[in-house]
Image 1 (tube, rainbow, N blue to C red):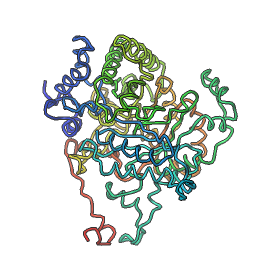
Image 2 (image 1 turned 180 degrees about the horizontal axis):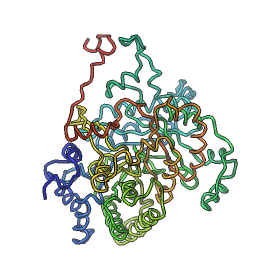
Image 3 (image 1 turned 90 degrees about the horizontal axis):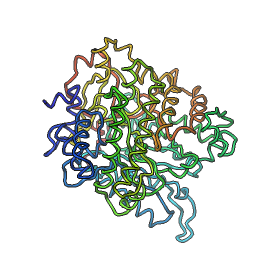
Image 4 (image 1 turned 45 degrees about the vertical axis):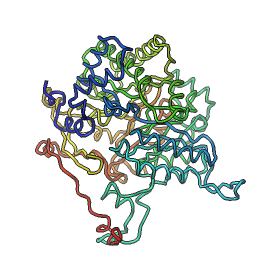
Length: 575
C-alpha cells in the first residue's frame, strides 16, 4: 500500500511528514505498528494488537499527538499535557510551580494551572512588609517560560491559566489580554495608533501579554446557587431529572466574562459543579479535569466517521480503552509526583472525532439525535466496563475517569474528518502551521469531509452546513455540547465560532441573551469557549471560496512577515 493511500489529501500527508515522520516510523502504517507494540507490550494478545494496528492504520482510532511523536523514540513522553495547581500561597510554592511548569513543557506536553489560591495583588505580606504581586504576575512568568521552552525542541508551548470567579483579581484577569487597548509609542503610516493587538495580527510571533496562554474563569457551586436562587442539592436533583431551570440572576462578573469572550475570545468558562467542584485543574485544551496537582493527560480519539455499525464501534472502544490503560504503564513522566498521581488516578482520555461527518453521512443535522445517543451510550458503557475489568486483570488501580473529548485539530486533519465534536468548519479554508519549529507555512485545503460528500453524494458546497453557518445560532452549539457532555465524565474541548464583534449578530445587544443561554445550560457543561472571527492574530484556519481552494489545493506557501521595526518606524530593533 502506498503512503498516499492512507490520507485523503496531500495536506494530510504533509502534516504527517512535518510533525510525526521520523526514523523508525517513516510511514503511517509503520508508525501505527511501532506505536501499538511499544505501548501494549505483552498486556494485550497478539490478535488484539493486530486489530489495534489495523484500526489505527485505517484512522478509526488515533492516539494523541504525543503518542504519535514519541512512537519508537527512546523517551516515551506520551502524555499530551500536565495539570498543575498553585497549592499554597507561599514563596516556596511560587518557585516550585515554575519548576514543575518548565519540567513539563520540556517534554513537549502542554500545561494548565489553576492560580486561585494565590492572594490578590496588593495584599500585605506580613513577614516581609511588602505587598503581593498576585496570580496574574505569576501567570506572566509562566507564559515567558513557555516562550523560551520550545516544546520537545520542535513546537510552541501550550499553556492554560484559570482563576476563580470570586477572586479579588478576577476583574483584572478578564481584561489581561485586551491587546487592542494596549498602545505603544508611534503611529502607523495611516496615522492610526499602534497597539499590541495590531502588531500581533501582522506578525503572530510579536510579543503580547499571556500570548502563549489560554485563560478561563472557574465557576463553582456558589455560582449556580446565585444564578438559580436554589440550594445546590435542589439544582442537582432538577438536572438529573431533566427539569428546566430558570435563570434568576446573572452575576456582573459573568456578564462581563461573556462580553469579553464575544469581543476577544477570552477568557473562556470553566464549570465545576456538584461533586466535581474541586476539579478546577485543566490541561491546555481543557478537556481533562482533575483536583490533584501534577495529574496527566492520556489521550486517544475514536473516529466515528469510519464506522458503519455500532458493533464495530463497540469493539474499537474496547481496544482503544485497553491501549490507554497500557499507556499509563509505559509513558515516561517529567518528575516523581506525576508517577504518584497517575498511579492514584490513572485517567484515560478516550475521545471522539468525526461526529459531524457521522451525522452528515446519515442525513442528520448538527443535533444529538436518538441514533447518536445509542452510539454515545456504547462509548460510555463499554469504556467504563473494559477499563475497570482490564485494570483488575493487571492488578493496578482503576481509572477515576475514562472519557475526555480533545479538539483533535492535527489528527482530525490527518484523518480528513471533522475534529472533536466540532461541526465542519468550512468546505474550504487556508490552514496555517509552524514548520521546522520556526517558519509559518500555509496551504489551501478542501475539507476532507466536504470533499467526500461532494464527490460521493453530489452535494453542492453551499448546501453543507458548517461552523460558519452555525455562527448565527450559537444556542444550537451550546445545546449540542451539553447533549454530548451527558456521556463524558471529564470535559469537552469545543469552541463556538462567532461572527466578528460589532456585526449584526455579535454585538452589545446580544450579550445578555448569550449569557442567559450559557447560564441556563451551564449545569450540564464542564466548560465553553467562543472565537469571534478575526479576534486574534494568526488564527490557524481562514475560510476561502471553494473555487479558490480548488485551484490552489496541494501547493504549500511560506508566509513572509514584515519586520516590527518597519511597522513601527522606530528603527530600534537592530540597535
